[in-house]
Image 1 (tube, rainbow, N blue to C red):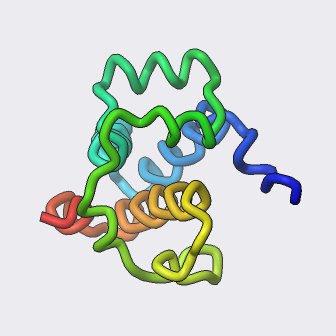
Image 2 (cartoon, helix red, strand yellow):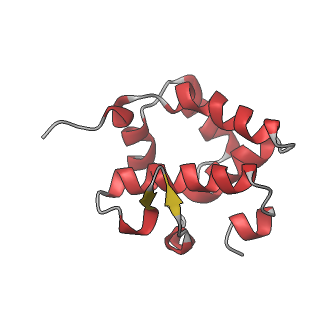
Length: 116
């Protein structure tokens, strides 16, 4: 079975789109970074290093220091698919990130986005 194309894409190639999506709705790059750090456990320095290294999504999530246990609380539809129904672990992590960025762009408070 071949891997989905997104697994081999670098986070750095998609990251500017996350930031642009957030900024168009009056949110900030630092909020995007906070979401990524919350989800993965990367520090800001290590996140920036991953972006600089052009790390692909599969490696980025595989090497994540501490995937947040509260990420299981992320529910809803992204790209027409319910995130909680995605069985493949790496794809689920990618879609969790997509969903959180979506929530940021839709104006949800950081407290709600980070499931506090």
